Amino acid sequence: MATYVLIHGAGDSAFYWHLLEPELRARGHEAVSVDLPCEDPSAGLGDYADAVVAAIGERTEPILVAHSFAGFTAPLVCARVPVPLLVLVAGMVPAPGERGGDWTANTAYPGALAESEAEIFYHDVPDRLAREALAHSRRQADAPGSEPWPLDAWPEVPTRYLLCRQDRMFPADWMREVVRARLGIEPDEIESGHCPALSCPGELAARLDAYRLEIAEGA
Image (tube, rainbow, N blue to C red; front, side):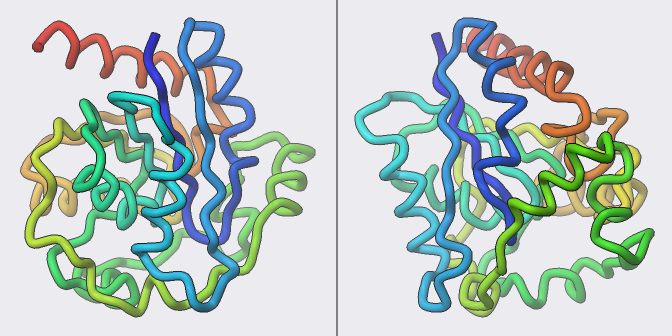
């Protein structure tokens, strides 16, 4: 049995993972969803990492799954807890010393491919579920995007990147180049918008389990 620790993106909540959790449990694994202190104006990246470490508790060898802005938090956890695998799902990839607020300019971000929040994030999610997700969204405080990312380099942890081909927030053609340049790997791809944990949780669970098996067999 593996433990998957699920870290949501900016202005979101653990609700984002509520369909993925039973999919992982059906495969015999434990799923732990973390609520980050995103509404706390004083909480920075260290506090976000603290929340994840607290959720891990005494569990050993957690697999971290980081969505979107959680790409800034998950590597900090890897620096504090032994982690066998980090999976970025449509995740941001920070550079040493980079502020989240500067990330779009530094990566030549082309902009979102839609205007409304629903069209950007949930265009491939059933309407009722999209409304629920919007109702569970939270205000994102500025603090974690205003401080330099504190690591000197990406942690020496096996890392996989799952790119979403229909992503309207992080357009696929641009994100492929960001991943290649910053991680030096070729991203895997899924036919989904920005939020595959809502649009295709079964397929996402299968992808995560395949990564786990790949790492286990390599070890």
